[in-house]
Length: 411
Ligand SMILES: Nc1ncnc2c1ncn2[C@@H]1O[C@H](COP(=O)(O)OP(=O)(O)OP(=O)(O)O)[C@@H](O)[C@H]1O
Ligand SMILES: [Mg+2]
Image (tube, rainbow, N blue to C red):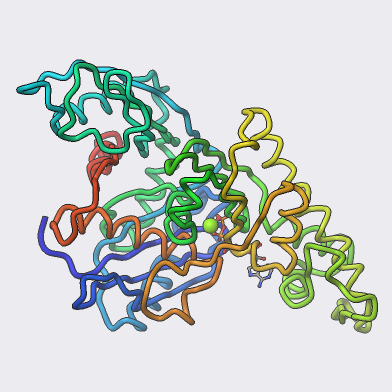
């Protein structure tokens, strides 16, 4: 792989497309040097439904990021989301074959392949295979088994699959816009990279990425992804409710939500008033902010309850020592953390993408978590491959490897 000095994350969301440019500084640390966004109109619930519209938004977002950083973009790492995404846990076992029964890279690759050998429907493709832990003979909880001595090597992995056609449409938009896709990464995995701490991942944490059209759920246990889900609801529903209840157009409702919305009633003062713009010749009116909150809170609560039910069914709620982290544009609504704390009954916070350097005041918004996370995710692979650092590369993913598979079926 040629030496790289920049990496571009492209988050194609339901409400906006966001391009983030990351460059390595002289100290070998990735810095965000450009962020560009463009309203997105070609997606429904996280999935591309209009190639032309999405292509235009991709071009506009990348152009804006190029302007900010002064760099030209050719390749991108793209996120993928939508309700077609599924996560399952699997395990594989192999005999250690190396000299002196020392586990080598080949053994690790073989055991991951064995764990990955599950039956996947023809219309789905594996997006990620992420090792959770390895077991050498009977010793469990091993994160990196390389060079250990053993006879039997087991791997527990989290496999994420998605619809082939959804991924192909995504690739098509980006390619037609004139860019090469280096890799496709699950959006929530990227968001997690940007907003979660290592400690939270170890303790067990629930990441909720509340977007415009989808709510992505990713639970980490013992430092690795354990449960993935994508719900087809998001902040768009909240705006819709305001629009219907206050009999105001969607755009006006969105403005009211952003300026005066709150997800937690106890935080709103009874005296506060909100101006509702007049439509169709009607004069503008003023209503108590509490009334807006009474529309917003039940919908946000419903979304959190849906997430909670899914985790409850799997018996996972008791494994969240690291609490709940809510990110995505939907988390910018005041009271989000307070409401999540109440619904889940455990500590909750809003996740901002703080784990990168550079133009901090520009990109540290919850809505940019996926875009920034894509840069961080991909940069780890590049650094590992170039030997800039020596992180334990224990992921079953090979950077860019899977793009070949998508294309194989695409052509
Ligand atoms: N300041 C704010 N206050 C309240 N809501 C906000 C704010 N900023 C953004 N939102 C809401 O966040 C949502 C968009 O979030 P985000 O940009 O993360 O979505 P997306 O990535 O485009 O969509 P998805 O991930 O669902 O495909 C919208 O519903 C928008 O109303
Ligand atoms: Mg999103």
